[in-house]
Amino acid sequence: MGHRDRRLGRRMVLPLILLLLAVQGYPMAFAVYISAHDYRLTALSEVRWVGLEQYRGLLDNPSYWTAMKNTLVFVFGAVSLELLLGFLVAYLLWRPVPAQNLFRAILLTPMFVTPIAVGLMFRFLLNNQLGIIPVWLRSLGLEIDWFGPDLALFSLILIDVWQWTPLMVLLLLAGLEALPVEPFEAARVDGASELQIIRHLTIPLIRPVMLAAILIRMLDAFRVFEYVYAITRGGPGERTETILFHIYRVGFLYFRLGEAAAMAITLALVIFVLVVLLFRSLRRQEALT
Amino acid sequence: MTGLARGIAVKAMPARGILRWGRRWPVLLRFSMLSIAAVAVLFPFLWIFLASLKPPVELSRPSLFGFEPTGVNWSEVWLNSPFARYFLNSVMVGSLTVMVSLIVGAPAAYAFSRFRVGGTGLRFLILAAQMMPPALFIIPFFLMAYYVGLLDTIWAVAIAHLTFIAPLVTWFLIGFFEDVPRDLEEQAMVDGCTRWQAFVRVVLPAARPGLAAAGLFAFIMSWNEMFYALMLAGGHSKTLPVAIAGYWTFRGVDMGKMSVAITSAVIPVMIASFFVQRYLVRGLGGGALKG
Image (cartoon, rainbow over all chains, first blue to last red; front, side, top):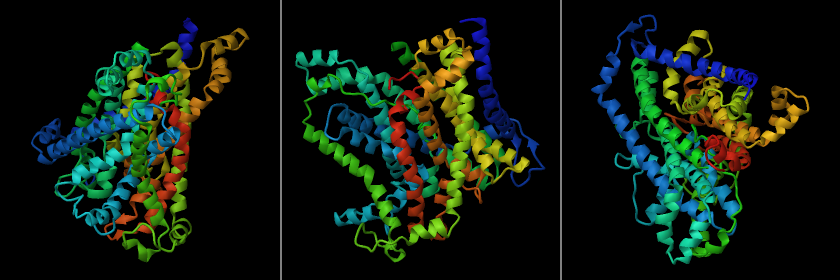
């Protein structure tokens, strides 16, 4: 690669770098600044330097930890269910089946719907007076309070599973379709059973793709907001208060921007670690291909 | 999906050779299981569409069929409310964001795929940039929009959407440019083009499907985004997701109208998604995952 190519390359990247500095770099620095100040939307003329005080305050802020815990439960619950279900569906779609392309197109649709619409649809589908699902369950003798204190977070997880299992299917199916055929034929000649093949061949072979898919889903699940906003608004009590919703509440309902910014920065650090893991897993796969 | 559901696109591939050994699970069993999954996916869509046709008195009755369909909700929402304007707001925010992202992202992605400018560090930066949580940026954005008087304008929303759409588009395009054979541009340069001319005249046209897929997917992401839109433009510059959320208030819900709004917002992305699906895996992996 010549000197001129390198110069052209730098020029071609420059606009993107400038754009990212403007829309990400500067706001990020501003967020750090806000987090070190007592910055209230109701008193913008009385901004006061407080250093790390707001970070220290998070340590013994029970609402913050409840929101973090709820978010972790949500992320792990949703992503593990999506992995199981997504693998099953991808496996079913992998080999020829009648209407294969139609199934694929239908089963992928939920991930393209705006999450607020998904949240509202399920809010009213599962509503005890208006919804049709409780009517059917009642005719089976089941009375389930989907958004009561015990089940609310779990119901949000199920909604996430409905919407995002398709992404898992998409990624895992791509992984399955890229697998070589020979090892499977050899295993079959040796008389291995279907379950043995899945356990000792299929899963180990697509593990790298699985890891990338899990990380991509986790990164997304951490910012769950719309379902909470559409359905529970954090309740009952704080049972479904997730971290993004809590930041919204503290910043925009209680007007404590400084404290909200400090929370957002701790969340960004968690996300950053996951991005590092995702990047490493993608690079490893590139090295393989 | 927000976020990313950001992009790994998988291209549809023919099931080569798999036929011979893939006969273990009876086809009928697999077909029935997939049918159950399809019903679970389609049912909420069917339900919300039917609700949009129900006369207001029927809406409190949880039944699927057995009502006289009416267009009254549709005409109320589209003709007698500012909904069409919110629809237009979403179209404008999405087009603006995607246009800027393609103009800025395509050269950068090309420079990365051909010259490795910035190396691993830059590539990581692009991935990290699209994954950063919106909570980190919303407070600075809100204050900046407030200070410069951009609150409740589509500009504020479009700029906020650039934070994740621009890196997303760039990330997608890296993979697609790697699929364009290098011989193409080398031939163009032998014929007297400069490298830049070769990029504009030969590489960009050759990567058109990838550009279209990345642009459409980015448009869907912007169309569906609610967090920024809700905080930055809750008034007359609402985008569709914010408008949809607005049908459920503390005074109760207007089910019929909300169903119309949801159906109207979902149909365009459904159509777009069929064009995007086969490119999605390749794009999401930034070229690392096979599509």
